[in-house]
Structure formats: C-alpha cells, structure tokens
Length: 88
Image (cartoon, rainbow, N blue to C red; front, top):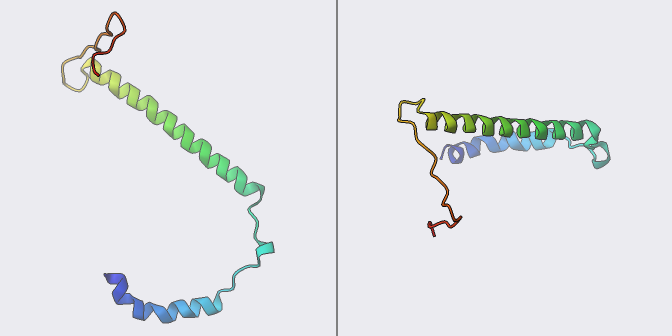
C-alpha cells in the first residue's frame, strides 16, 4: 500500500517527466545487427548454463547413489526381464 500513499506526491513529478522527456521518432529507432548478436550470445549463455546444470545434477545423483552424502549406497532398480512395467 506504499504506492497508493505516494501517488499524490509522485503525480506532479511524472507529469513533469512526460513534458520534458521527448520520445525518439520511429525511423530513428532500430535494433540492428549488434542487438541480434547480443540476443544470440545470451541464448548461447543460457544453453551453456543449462548444460552445466544438467551435468552437475547427474554428478549429484551418482554421488547420492554411491553413498557420498552419508546415506547407504543404493542400487538402481532392475528392469523387468520381459519389459513389462507394473507401475500402471
């Protein structure tokens, strides 16, 4: 509710900003090749972070199965011989 209390004080400031701040013309604004390169660079960074997270989670899972975290080592559940799954 802080915003509701500050609105009467901020309204004149926002009106002044609207009067002083001039928006650029549409023909002056373009994304360009640099923005495209930054976009693809960020996409590659997110992909690398996801790949790294997946690797770390696999390491944690294998360490947990090996009993590194103080619990007894666990064995993977064996697959049914005939390939049927009785889980439903």
